[in-house]
Length: 145
Image: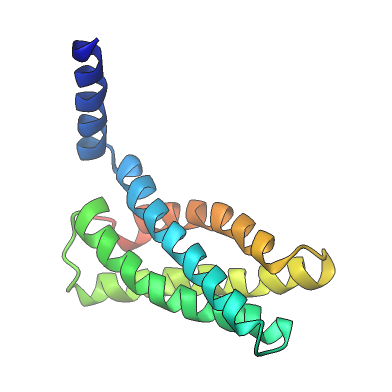
């Protein structure tokens, strides 16, 4: 039994070290969870003070700016093993996220206002879909070696 558990653990370590998509999933997932938690805390706080539309959009903008910065350093260090001080890479990263952010800024109000899905559920759905665009963009554009 101990031998089997050690084998699973060592296979997981090998997968983490050798498979970039596993590292992206781990660090990107951690960053996505941080973004969603920050979004929810901000939304619940700001919705007590501001109108609903302002609260969910401001929460989205603040959480995205914060976690895009965090995500850049996480992906440089742990996912793609790249230097975070490369200015071209930095600009490519933020250019990609500008596109992903714009898509999010358009889709969130559509889902809330027209599909009448709550802001929390809408953003939760978007946090599941957006990483697919991010991974492909980072692999093919930002961190292409």
